[in-house]
Length: 343
Image (cartoon, rainbow, N blue to C red; front, top):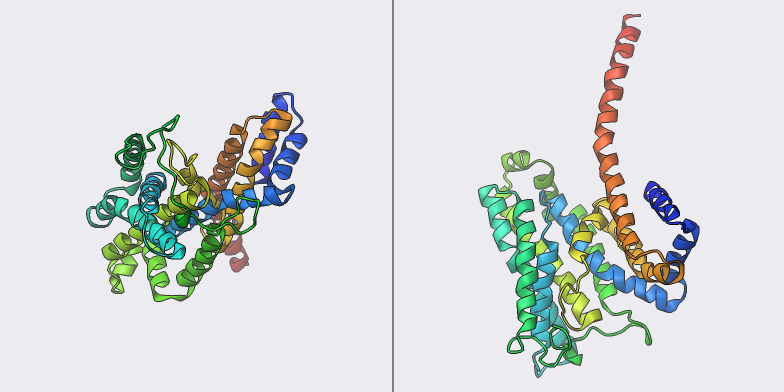
């Protein structure tokens, strides 16, 4: 991560701007006052939820690149329920909307889950293509006033969800909402499930060695299929929380690439639910502080994406090189050990 900031600093320096000023602006924008901290938490919330799904998938042998599309479908499902004037208490309306988001994401993951589990087709290719299907399908929905679109809007967007479906604000005068509690609790639950439950052990076994899991009696295909649907549910919940807690309506490309960022958040967190909490807040702080960096020192907010990309690049690079370094060390030490034995 340090290397990512060093390289980013060089890029900023080439533009004639002091990188220390730029990074200081990010820190102030993310943690300068209570409003900034609240904004960081809001930015981190969907990243944390989505990255938990990504973490579950990787642990179970699934690399879901379709979180973006599943996010959109989950958001649309939650918005649809959130627009209904249901004669129920607010907490129940919120719960039903969140469940709709989870189901939407899970249903959108059925096809890649089936193809992965029962046909052996790469989920990477399928989910990448389905991202566009999900994004443009939701775009169609918000362009149609007869569906969820807003008729008198200056740009295409859905109607605002009803107040009864909105997640409650935790700190008055800020945007911090109840979604952050949902996200952290889910992280703790997933950590416990993966580490201590039979389901977690079975999932980790399938992810580490599906052949060995099959030989000890695990139904590998069913495990992959079920886990994939759960991963899609996390992505759908990510979209639902973003709408119910923060945006309150859908518009074209409202996510800002949240689904894609979950890959980076999960990898930076070491594919561990507790580590993902830290990495989600790190990425959330970059998103929250990027605007102040642009306003005060003139560095584009796209630099935040550069930093994120560099972080992932160095993480993947280190993970790629470590086994080779270990192998090289073992082959180098072997003759020395043999000579010692002969002596």
